[in-house]
Length: 373
Image (tube, rainbow, N blue to C red; front, side, top):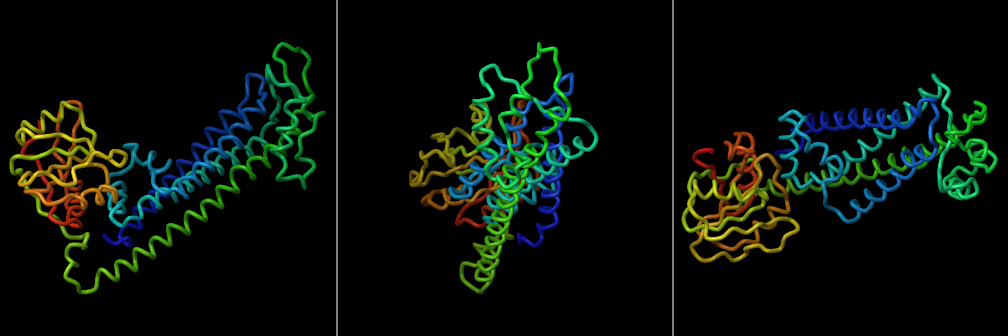
């Protein structure tokens, strides 16, 4: 499947993730900025949301960028069954171009930037339309304890004196629930510049830079795939095997005896249902990206059946594992769909995707169960 045909669906997913991130940012900021019954907002909670969590998530993104692998936050969000089927199908087709992980990393940055914009926009709206009272409460911390941390956080904007923390301001805005004397509004409102600078420096700006980096890496991968596609399109003896638009053979039976390899992590009850339909397996071996017990040299004249989740997109890691398996009687991929009541019929769209994936491998077929239970 050419990437150009996926662009409209991928843009819809990007727009959906962006809007979802904006709404999450609105809700997260409102939950903290709404304050208590008297409208007082705890400064320490704001620092957790606008400084601590963004820095931790940013470090995690950098780690994933350097290490590679993992589907990131966007992958988990897209796994939620609320997206239209044609969009998730487009994402599964993207997996065949080996650009899925970078695309998901790129979408994670879009979500993070949208989240930051949602927080910042709501913050500005509340500053314009309400009088936010910034206070802080702590049983363990004193003003002298808090000052070094706040000054360290404010180091990047030392050039903006009005947005810096001072011991006097910290002392004047310390709140005690049982203290009947109130604090003047001009004092408790002075923190707004500090919080604004915190959002810009620790949330919006670094995430925007990460978005640019992720976008460049994703575009570079697309260019690499395009060059590879041009090379693969040249007349060669192996052109048919590398054509992701071809479909592997579909079969409804397996040659006995056979070994069951479980990439889908199904339950023992489903093992019994599968063997009722296919016959008893000589062995069942769980496999996966983090599991090394993998049959690379199956017994002679014994078939292999690999269980996969029909609704999940094929991954390059699975392709690498399957290419490393030696010859056997039959090598079959079984896309499985099930629920609490039993095994269900695989949808034609999912079945077609796995046939397209199997066509990129050598001597692999797709197995479809005769009936569902």
